[in-house]
Length: 67
Image (tube, rainbow, N blue to C red):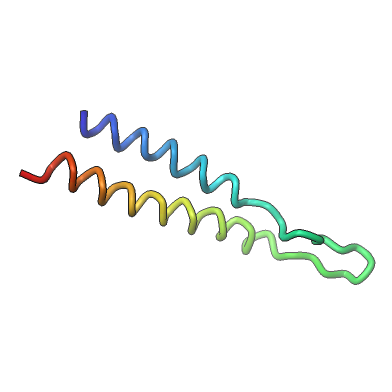
């Protein structure tokens, strides 16, 4: 059951991270030339997915592997 839970966590974390890959409200503003960097947008989603994955893996290991 442990490997199944870890793979379910992978799907959940990547889905949560995917919702954070978007530009900030009001950007891009084509009149002023303010465009948010694409790498910054992707890093925001990656960091959130990594945070959810680390916390989730800690919880799964604690509840399933703790004797």
